[in-house]
Length: 289
Image (cartoon, rainbow, N blue to C red; front, side, top):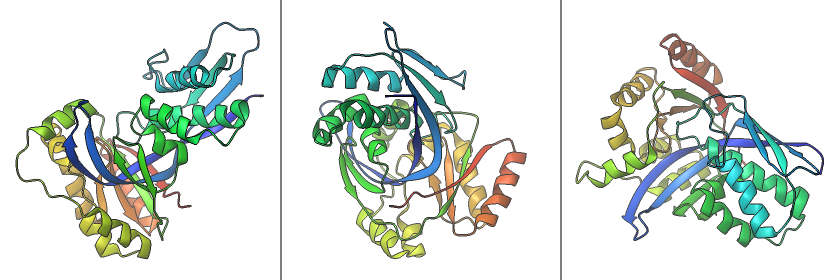
């Protein structure tokens, strides 16, 4: 294996419904997730004769030790498939952090994909890899496949779906992030006022490009506690609506919000306005395959 560079795609959740809380403390979820062209680049170089693996990132806010999901992915693959070797991993960061866009999970999945293709070299390990990926993080199985999917369980159940139109996507992120754990804990304390998505109706709307059906069911129940914790998210979504960006929502547990459109120029104009207000923006598109 020589030095290789793998794309680690961001994701957005078009809808999230939270079901029962499990005995292990996690929640069963039902959501629709789509990969984006927005991506980190993960460079992996073998280090023959080395007794250490080194992880670097061009974003100084990223912790590059054994707690990083990319590092955990390498250790899990090495332990599970019993191969030797150490590597230098460099993450070129483009996906906003603490945003609900799956950046850390995408980087971990990229490491798994690289080792599966260039070191393991076998297509018979998918069940083993799925279990390994889930143990690293709940978004890692989805990020390994990078295909639009209905995601269930803790994130391990993937039913791939068809998306008729590759919408352009504007990502807008406030300076502040939110803790996934705190958002879920806050959700558990909300007893009423939650409007739930019809996941099957959303999937059908995506299959036939029914804009009204997409808008009606593009609901993230976690946006309720997230907006209570960070009202700026609600203000951002209201501003998108005022800009006639009606296909908008919050991804994951936030804090990034998104707007979908078939008109790239409309999103470019909106991005310019949000940048003037101090938000971080990214203009990207669905990956549909």
